[in-house]
Length: 187
Image (cartoon, rainbow, N blue to C red; front, side):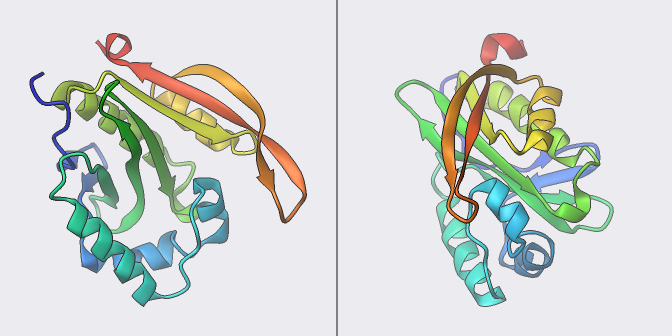
């Protein structure tokens, strides 16, 4: 592979279309996930309180699509074109050819295999279309649903950072559970 990064491209899955965000996604995002405290907490992102703040965020993402190191997909149901979540590389290490991946799905659509379908397709895209050698992800110990997504997507458990998260609201610590997949695992 000549080019390490190719940027966000449309990915067709069985039930999903993964595509760059558009400004029209704001209403579905607000309705489905970006203002849901539980979803955003598990995802490690803030809750957005109104449509105008979601549109501001979208403008930032949309303007980043010209950068071939920017990977952020809207997770859209093919059956009705509804945005039900997102999947993204939250960071890329160009020197060592790996990326950290994150995802979230609307609570109304969890438990239906959509996150695993999206993650599996992004893994396929990564190893077939980019020069990246490794993808890694983690979940919080309390978020066992995310562990199932990572395992279904053929990512391998790599270790636990004990009590690496602190929840201020409950004065509790939680573990960070690490997973990864490398190009050799995929092929």
